[in-house]
Structures are given as C-alpha cells and as structure tokens.
Image 1: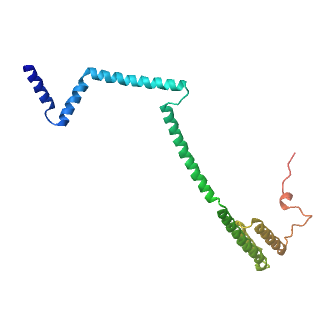
Image 2: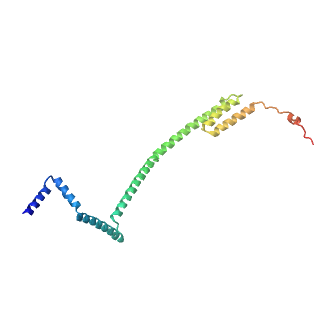
Image 3: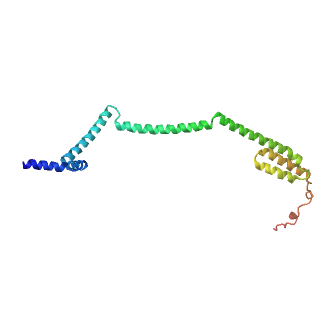
Length: 194
C-alpha cells in the first residue's frame, strides 16, 4: 500500500495548485524529455524532406508548387501596381490634352498674337508721322526699344533702317580733301637710304 499511497501523493502534488501552474509543469517536463524532443526534430526533418520530394515530383509533372504560385502572385501584384500607375498617368495626359483644353489654349494664344500685331501696326504707322524732320537720333531712340521688345523684329529693323536713311539724307555731306592733294602724313615720310 505504501507504493499506492506514494503514487497518490505524487499525483496530488502534481495536480495541486492552479491550472496554469499545472500546465506549465507538464509542458516543461515534456520538453525536458529527450525522447519527445528527438521525435519532434525527426518529424520536422521528415516534413521538410516530404516538401522537397513534392516539389521535385511536381516539377517532373510540370505542375507549379506552392512557392512558384506565391512568387507568381507577388509578380502579378507588382505588375498590377505598375499598370495602375500607368493608367493614372494616361488619365492625366488625357485630361491635359482634351480637345476643349487645347482649343482654349490655342484661342488664347491667337488672341494675344492679334493684340500684339495690332499694337505693332499702330506703333509702326505712328512712328514716321511723329518723328521730326530734322532729328534722326529721335527715330533711332524709338526704333531701338521696339526691336528689343521682340514683338516683330523685322518690322523694327525696317523702321530703324528708314530712320537711318532719312537722317543720312538730311545731313550735309562732308567734303573730302581735294582729289589732287596728298595727305600730309605721306608727304612728310622720310625716304629710306641705300
């Protein structure tokens, strides 16, 4: 009976206390058991070998394995994200290049060009009448800023050329030295000796 009482006493000690303590003790005893840890290690090794054998067999049958499917899924997700980005870019371009937007911009540019041409024509028509007859420098002063503004470079250059020709026609021509006389610098130059 002593053995039976010892066994009962051991069971009472093991199962005494809270449930958490009992479960903790039981798991720690199981993990300390070398037979159990060896069996768990062998089971994991067998599982790994079975997975490798399955991949080889599926590869021989030309069927995708779970890792192949996972890899393919990741690649499809990345392609999907890239396509969404491309679609967003195309939508933005479509909105920017819509016919109404382009036409509105072109009509605004045409209107600006018309107003610039009108101003330029008014300025060119007013320039010859407004210049005094005797002053060529005033015409030069008015033509130069218009040429710099860049509205119509050819028209500004023509206006400048007209002003120069008017100034040249009004100015008195300078008389040159007499045709028969030689310049003084040449007459006084010494002759080389031999």
